[in-house]
Amino acid sequence: MKKILFIFLSILVATNAHANQPKDWQLGFQKAASETMRDIVNFHDKLLLPIIIGISVFVLFLMIYACVRFRASANPVPSKRTHNVAVEVLWTLIPCLILIVMAVPSFKILYKQDTIPKADVTVKAIGYQWYWGYEYPDENIIFDSYMIEDKDLKENQPRLLAVDNELVIPVNKVIKVLITANDVLHAWALPSFGVKRDAVPGRINETWFKPEKIGTYYGQCSELCGIKHAFMPITVKVVSEEEYKDWLIEAKEKFAKDIIDIKTEEKQLKRLAKK
Image (tube, rainbow, N blue to C red; front, side, top):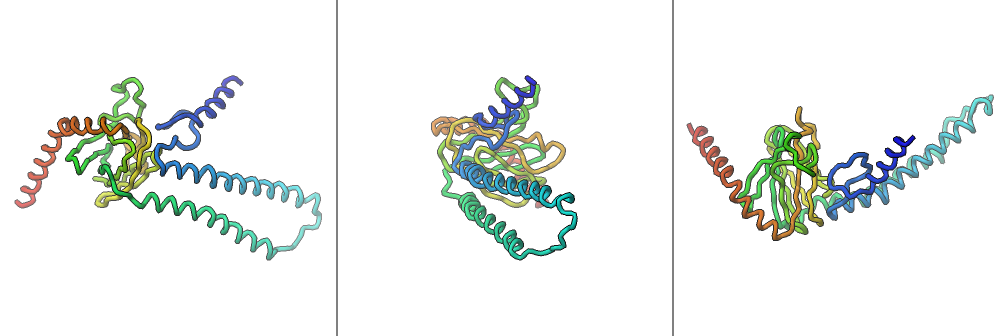
C-alpha cells in the first residue's frame, strides 16, 4: 500500500515540477521556456483537454444508457428501426463544429511557428548517424556534439542527454535554426521551446524560437534513424548576452582547427573531382 501511495505522489509531483528535461513519472509537457511553447500548452490544456474529456464522458454515458435501456430483458421484442434523420444530422454537424473550433486556434499557432522573424542568431543543425553537428554561419564556427557515455558522466549530467559540446545561444534573442541531415532522416526537437523539425538529406528546413529563461535544455532526435537513434541527444545552453559573447571568443579558438581541417578536406575533394 505504501509503495502504491509513493508512486501516486511521485506522479503528482512530477506533473508540476519545473522541467527542462524528461523526469521520472512525468505527465504532461515540459515547462515552457518560449512563447511558442506556451501557446501550444495553452491550446492543449484550455481547449483540447476539455473537448476530449467532454466527448469521453458523453460517449461513456451513451454506452451505459444503451446497455441499460436496451438490454434484452427490458426489450423482449427487439426494435427494427434502422434510421433517425435528426440523430444522423446531429452526429455529422456536431463533430464538424468541434473540428472548426479546434482548427482556428491551431492554424494561428502553426502560422506563427512558420513565420520566422528577423533572426538575431542563426545556427545550422546537421544530423549524422548518430550525433549532431552545428554551425554558426555568421561566426564561422563549426563543431560536432556527441553524447557523453555513462562512464564519463559528471555530477548533474543527465544520462542519454548530456553532450560534450553544447549549442550555446543568448537569452531573449530570436534564434533561427537551419536543419538538414547528411545520411538518413533525423528530427531536431526541443520540447521546452516547442520546436520539432525533420532533418532531411539534401534539403534545409527552418524553424525558430526565442528562449526566455537562462538554463540548459534537452531534446533528442525524434525520427527513427537507425540502431543508435536513442543516443543522439540535443543540448542547448541559454546564457546571458555577455556570456554568449565570451563563449564566441573561446569557441572561435577552440574549434579553429576543426574548421581548417574541414576546408582542407573540401579542397582535396575538389582536386580529386577535377582529376
